[in-house]
Image 1 (cartoon, rainbow, N blue to C red):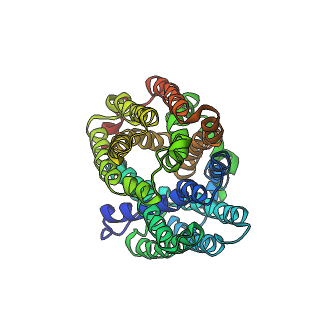
Image 2: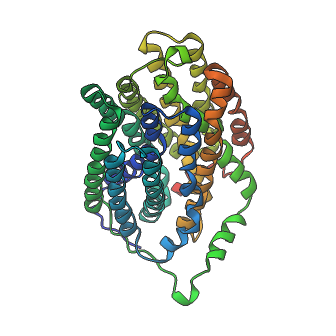
Image 3: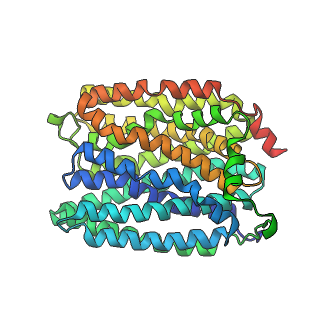
Length: 421
């Protein structure tokens, strides 16, 4: 396989993973803020927005289609155009009487398109870069993925908050915001068309093409696959619940146990200092794994991604008036997340190694989505049952299985060096 040398990976990786994460952020995370502003309960928010993870869980079912037909570039460009239309549909129906059902339907379509976009984008990353480059750029990749996510949680939420203050109507504010997101997706699609490499993909002769069953079975016969999947499912068990209830916690009135922040303030916290901290943590994580290998950094990164959750316990207990404390907790969390998530992404790349790496990476990330979906579906009920202080204590206790799996999981101790050799 070959690629045009003029395509700079520092540019196309950043652009491609921004475009991969922004729709994911809108569908999975920003929808939480939107529905909270529009009066939906925490229990319904946790259940229905977590159920939107399902396409990412089951995407391995159709991932072999992308492995065997078309090109990765054509697939992700098509899906990105569909996502533009999806967000336009959400924007045009947010103010209707049945907005919850209608917008959820649009988000469902978007979730399937976004999951397919992920398969194709990850596939291009795996075939356009050699193993050493994959390890080196994992920090850039995960960082811009999270920057895209925080663009949703930050900039887009800030815009919605400012429009809410201007119009005095949350429905109208979110309508214009999601129409703006549709325009942004269209622009990013054009950038990806121009910046991503045209890779000549190696094809298996039609007579030798494997069945879907063989593509799947070769994944489940990998060495130590049970332990590996346990790690994938449990490494972010605490975060999978925290991410659903963090925004409602910031937005809820103080009488309800929240901090009573405005939509704009929540967007500012995530979209400014949070982005800077994430950028530093993600790039640093990729560099140290590339230099020293995954074995040396797995446990420190597990601590980095999980320990900052303690800050939310302190916030819920003290309910500080100042936004500085809340901002500090988010900055520490994002710094740790960026650093710790690098280990997770490198492990997923390792797990996908083999002849069917695109389909196998989709399988690995499908289990990753399952690890976010199932706990997230219960998070709203847990929060309403325990209250915010008790819920955040539960989140910290839920990190224990992740620490255990990070300690027990099997992987090449010098994985980073192996990739460079």
